[in-house]
Amino acid sequence: MSFFKTDDSWAGLILRVGLGVVMFAHGAQKLLGWFGGNGFEGTLGFFTQKMGLPWLVAFLVIIGESLGSVGLIVGFLTRFTAASFIVIMLGAIATVHWPYGFYMNWFGLQQGEGFEYHLLVIAMSAALVVIGGGKWSVDGIIAAWLER
Image (cartoon, rainbow, N blue to C red; front, side, top):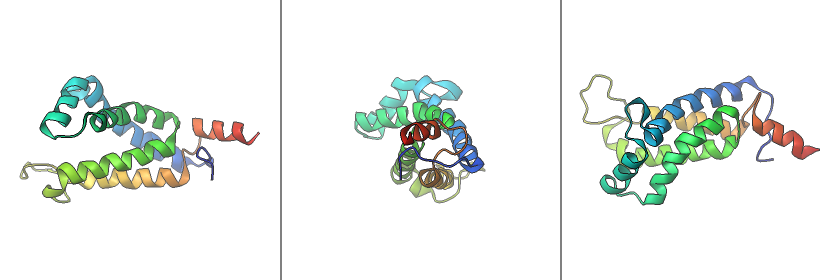
């Protein structure tokens, strides 16, 4: 199977754009400080100083969520980005969200957020790893070009 190969399905398009838009908001918080986020320096400092993550891991999470989400929306490097989102979400569950259980903190009764959101990202990403970017993806254009 080619890394870029995909079918012309609506499912890939819907999954990648939906996931890409949601992840862009999270990435923009971390990289740009939009939507109430801390921006690049603040997020990097939080990840390295408070959470104790290596700077490279923190950097890759910030870039993966922000630039990766843009690539995902247009369908460029879909499988790579989706696989990276799986790794990022597993890391978030393992380092932060596992102690708070499954559910998000809908009613403010928990000390933190559960991991249900992260499981949805993992499931959507896993589907994209399997099927590729779908209709109107840059990956599809690259795959067609490579087949020639």
